[in-house]
Image 1 (spheres, rainbow, N blue to C red):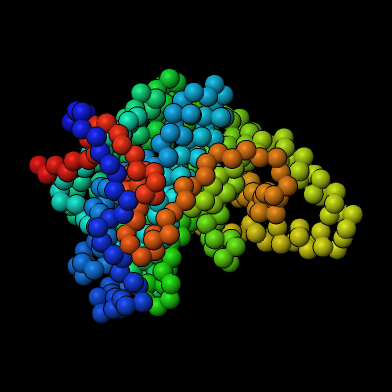
Image 2: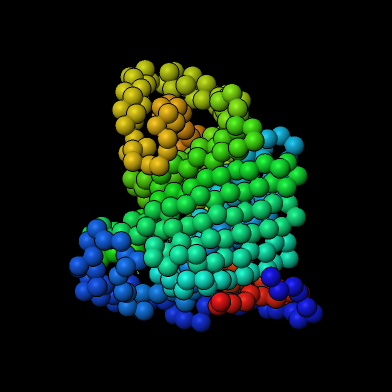
Length: 372
Ligand SMILES: CC(C)CCC[C@@H](C)[C@H]1CC[C@H]2[C@@H]3CC=C4C[C@@H](O)CC[C@]4(C)[C@H]3CC[C@]12C
């Protein structure tokens, strides 16, 4: 990878192209024959593209990579897991309202990005099916993996299954954590406002000590529920240590299991005092929630589903308690500029910077695209 010289670079603030306004789209003529098909095989009009390659999009996983520096400093394995899980959620934030199609890289195309505290190299290792591999490194961690997105047109929506595993290694601890990203759905492809949802269960495993985090990206049943994420961090004896809650496009907070239990007890006391009847209804609906759709058809091993379902019972309640519980903020998404819905704008740190004011001068190369 090219090393820095004395040039200083000013990051751009937006991509040099206006976003297609989706009400002008005439996408049906392209998609009418594609129902259920793998979209990587379909030629799309270039107006549907955003001016970035998929390799550049992959680099956006790194927008909040400083969380991994913090993780490497933590002494308690549960604290490390909590931060690795935070990183996994933060890595998806840049997808919010990004409804353009990135360019499919050529076979062997590479993209390098070097920042003050990390560098990342991505390469297209297969054209059909498209597979992108990446490797990022800093003094505190390594982050690598491959993504093989399966994109299917389902009529009103597009389903994306980002197959492939990603791994974080924390240098100081010689530990590896791995997970697969959750599925993604682009809604209202034909009519209405396009929006992106991340949904399903993500299991992050620490392969050295058996700690794991389970994150449930909720299906949006209402606009209030949209983008919510709930999770737990458990130790090698399956004892829950932390509860995580937030929104993948906004923030993630964390509460200790003790505070969570205290809060739940308090809540139950209050409830039983106020209405006995409501309680039994609640219990009934809890029992019903055993058949949560987000737990069906997700790529999680069978033996795991039982425990996750049980845990989800209490995770669900986080929705009501998140305002009462003693919690710490683990991550907050950077603010988006006002023009973000008009002009292609992408994740602040990586491909553009967020505001004029924040134009940063930094020493070192910006990025290079090298085709072999
Ligand atoms: C133009 C219309 C028809 C299609 C637009 C589809 C766009 C929105 C799709 C095509 C490829 C998709 C990406 C494929 C893979 C991943 C990796 C995953 O970890 C996060 C989501 C992410 C980054 C997807 C985001 C949405 C995406 C960019």
